[in-house]
Amino acid sequence: MESLQGRVGVVTGGASGIGRALAEALAREGAKVVVADLDEAGMAGVLAGIRGRGGEALAVRTDVGDLASVRALADRVFEAFGRVHVLCNNAGVALWGGLEAATHRDWQWALAVNLWGVIHGLEVFLPRMIAQKEPGHVVNTASMAGLVATGGLGIYNTTKYAVVGLSETLAKDLKPYGIGVSVLCPMGVQTRIRESERNRPAHLRNEVPVPAEPVELMGRSLAPETVAQMVLAAIRAGELYVITHDEGLEPLRRRFERMERSIRARKP
Image (cartoon, rainbow, N blue to C red; front, top):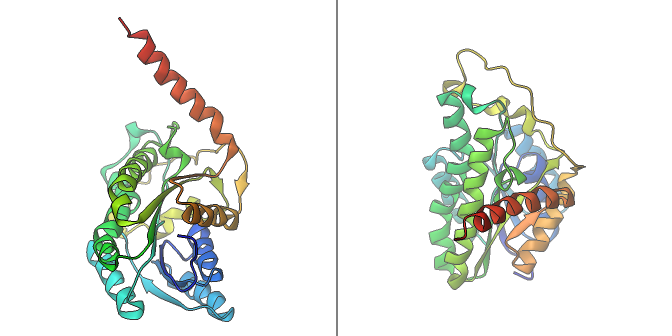
């Protein structure tokens, strides 16, 4: 997709962080933008900024873990704009702690947002995007934690590994339709993801809080705007992987070296 002028982009988790930066970047490129989030005040701020610069934007309160809510989002988008060209399944939450201490509610919450949120977005929007017979692109936000496992991030790792595998397969499945796919795998970014609990539904909160210290990530902490520009470049180029940090190269290399050693060690 060479130009975003006049296109329609949908960004979940668009009220802050990477999502907000993606929405603003799409708008600067001339796209009409739909911001979906639970944070209504945050969405209002994004809309004010975009509209203040002459852009066209819409906010829709959405719980990506709820299929009905995502269906309502799609209905609102197509009612307003009639098309969707860029779908950013970006909403995500993080939680910490060893898997041995993980609760069922921890699993339910993280899977609902990080994995089912992506699945719901695809389930609802893709059939309509394919029926348009126009160029399109899907961006799924994963993480470097979806490529290299880190202790203390087991639930998060699980959800993000799933998003990477889903995206790699989706890229093959959507190629005949002219719809590209990118999977965003950042390391440290200056967002509010450490405050994820603020949006945790009451029925999925642990009755007894599970103490856990956030995992400190290696490498730099990038501005969301920097990451958004990388994503836009990937959309234009049709690139699958958006790996934001050079610091990720070494752990990735070690991971695949271990795999190679395992294969070679078992040769007859």
